[in-house]
Length: 103
Length: 154
Image 1 (cartoon, rainbow over the protein chains, first blue to last red):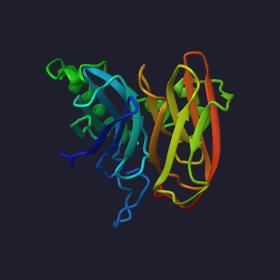
Image 2 (cartoon, each protein chain N blue to C red; image 1 turned 90 degrees about the vertical axis):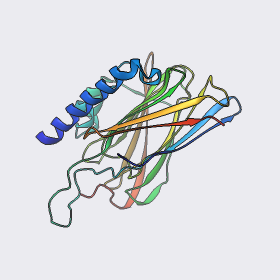
Image 3 (cartoon, rainbow over the protein chains, first blue to last red; image 1 turned 120 degrees about the vertical axis):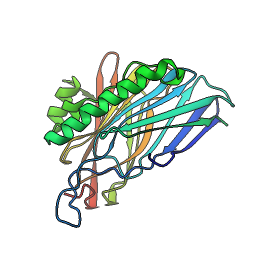
Image 4 (cartoon, chains in turn brown, green; image 1 turned 135 degrees about the horizontal axis):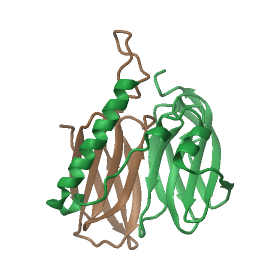
């Protein structure tokens, strides 16, 4: 199981400002390891952010995302104290879901 | 390549399963997210746009790309993209000279700003292309970013 995400979700002028930091190697499949062989690709392919049963952001990522991916976005329609759920899944089938309360 | 394709297919299967199980967890009860394999495996911007189903894009001041003009480390290039075009549903981020051109696709439902900030890998000095898709049309902006050290490992 991958390490937890670091998530911040704060109300700011009627919007929820969301910042997410995911713990992931993000191997491109183009890098050679110490043995000279290519390290197989291993990267987050999908991210979904849910609020109150509604998807507020959907992401598809390729191999060109930096290690330990960062993602920031903003949405309306939520209040302080609401819960936000972030799920990622990678190309090898690993996944991780974390929840945070909007402050 | 075959192997990674299989892995991606199984990842899609698992996500579908996760989402199907979401009837218990209300926060996952959504139509299955998909991964546009053809677009993400495209080796040129033209092929990626074709796979995304976006044939023609206008240039336009409605779309902003904020990124450094010189990125010392191509492994971590911060980019901020924003569209002021009304009804922006999708933003796609492409790197012309990366081995795989399409870096990211973002989908914005009603209520979510057409804005995102992330960090991408760039293999070499290249144009970064932002494509914002509204209900009616697509807008494209590009910006040259100079890369000192390549970040794809190739």
